[in-house]
Image (cartoon, rainbow, N blue to C red; front, side):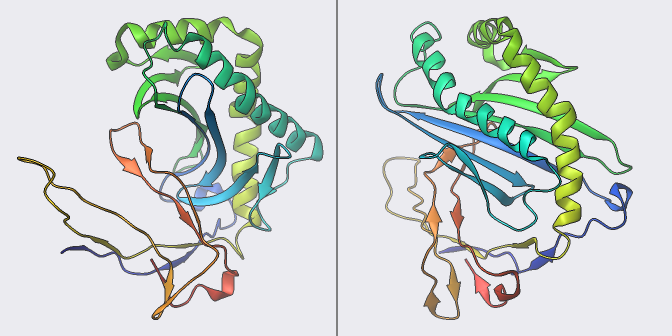
Length: 268
């Protein structure tokens, strides 16, 4: 068994008196993932993260944002929250329809995964930079640069075709631009301030075991995740599918909601 161990930590996210207190980049990102199983079946997921700490979920039944912590609302108004909910409802309904319509043209092969990541990063010194990335099967096709959507160099003609269609939707581009350049920076700073007392991150211990050999020069590496306290498995966890990153790696998300004062002794 190969052991990869990270010490268990409970790190308090403290904003200090202002954004200048940060010595490292910190980002707020909104992730939309769509799993296209065939021409008629698609599963969508929306979530939001402060670095690797999930702050928001999504109720697909009601089409509303789920605030996972007391500081998750930041200082956004009810109108701004409603606008974000409408935006992600559009993402969950219209975006998959557009992709299904053009899947054959873009040579998307079923089943496939689409991931859209957007948000903003707070850099040391106080500068805030927004970002937007569109990926197919973990490979980036589009990214935002100077308020313009551009095809990724490695995406070839497929990236150019997808970018051309997306740039034709002027209204949706304006909405995305306003969310990224205005709403996101204010929300990032306010959620950091609101979360001083109760936003915590627990880094897990991880073990990687080598499974049966599936063929020459290959190894099967199974993975399973459990949240533990002592020898007791913690119930009530929620687990995502195994999803691709834009850099060719994959990730699995396993969530356990606990009180901020009850993280001591937890490990994964």
